[in-house]
Amino acid sequence: MKILLLIIATLSLVCGVKFIYDARPIVKKYFSFGDKNEATLGLKIFGFSLIVIGSLIMYFIY
Image (cartoon, rainbow, N blue to C red; front, side, top):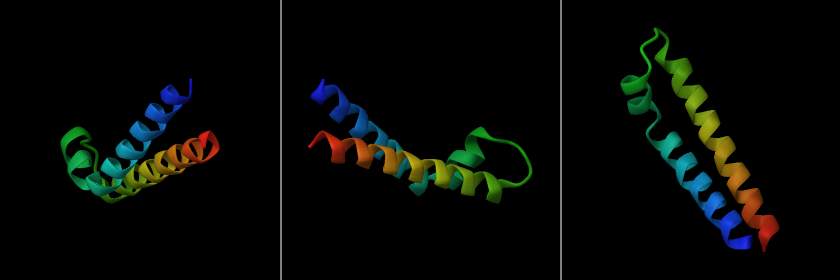
């Protein structure tokens, strides 16, 4: 059970960093609505949330 939670937390951290770092190219590729700055901000907030969730899971596992 501990290893499964560790894998989930690690994947959450990696996806969160990817969303923050590549937010603008992801928005350009997958979304086609007008305000790309708002979509980029939303994706960065989502990535930050994933990082916080993954970090909390790792913190409470150990």
